[in-house]
Length: 304
Ligand SMILES: [Zn+2]
Image (cartoon, rainbow, N blue to C red):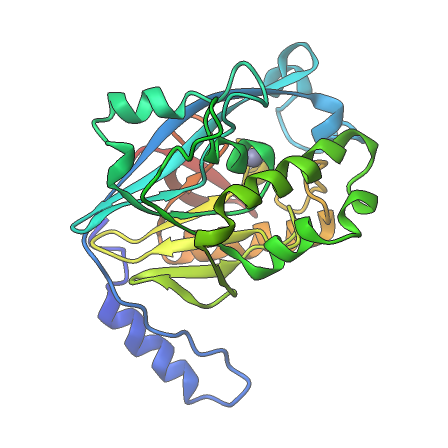
């Protein structure tokens, strides 16, 4: 990695130099770095019907790949990977998993945190990528108690406003009405300890919020700046290999498929250009890895 990766100083210097070219050039803000060990902890898995994710089927111009290979028996079986960052002052967690009331195959977070040796009371902050059930509903346990009782919670203002809006029920379609009601009552559980952010904000020291809308209106990715910067992409890059081979493909789980595709292309380009480690919530093998360019597309290389 070392020979290729741009170090932080080069990065800041280069982006500063770009800033001299003209006022239209986007200048990247420098974010603090903080030491911390990034790992993923499984919440179990989901089984999703193929026609939900790919309503128009798989295009036949993906070389060497058939739908049977990626989705056996009409179902995508996808992992759920919660990211935990152990920092000197406590643990920061990205998303809360599905909890006990979404799918029997998910909601394993509490036991897997215990197996990883993390006490839920050590969690100081929970940062949400978005408010879908598999990311939010695990905020409370079987007894409606907070899974992380000492934590503060953070979510994009846009995401919070969308799920709380009168229009949300009309926007999501018949089969996902429960997503709205479910989000609203989980929001109630954390309403007195929620903080809001916008894309570009530093949510906590060294944690950069990156606009990743499309999957949901306020869906957000995060860069955890530190010894090895890591981007938590949530569901913006959610299928291996389809999201990498055809990032432009409309994805049925994205509320706004065009915006979802634009976000996916932008994040993949940044991950490949900066050779940045990342975590995809639904990617296999723990969800952590790197992106490599492959022809005109990308490839997922799993591993920390
Ligand atoms: Zn998800």
